[in-house]
Amino acid sequence: MADLTINVRSFSYKKGIPEDTSGNGGGYVFDCRGVLNPGRIEAYKTQTGRDEAVKLYLETETKIHEFLGGVFQVIDISIEDYLNRGFLNLDINFGCTGGQHRSVYSADATAKHIEEKFPDAKVVVHHVMQEEKNWINLPY
Image: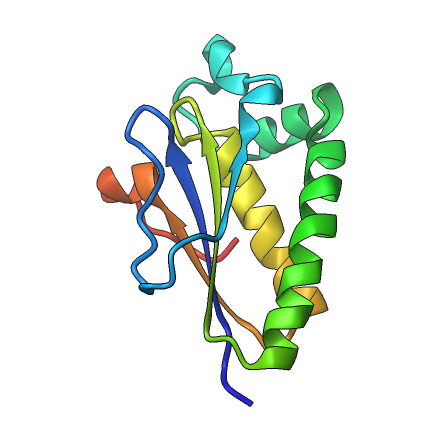
């Protein structure tokens, strides 16, 4: 069986949807802008979706859990099928206004979900906007 690599990315819609470099085209793009934006709160403007205060806000003041529950239902079908059929690549992208809060949180939560549920898949996480700022992408 071939190894499935799943690229999970956060990005800013202002900069555009990340390109699928696998050559397959497609993949998933989820729009996080329907979830309340912690970036509009002064205390969170310089933080990201990995900071504890932002995570707490998203988990208690927004519908992030419902949003991600729907995402997981959709992607799990493809991941299971891709693993069974020997596919090599899948892209899962999360966009929000600035690529800093909701999309970062969603990408990390999705990567963790995939790693726990599908240990045979290789997950690669990129936070496009944060990496442009020379952000060190530590494990979530």
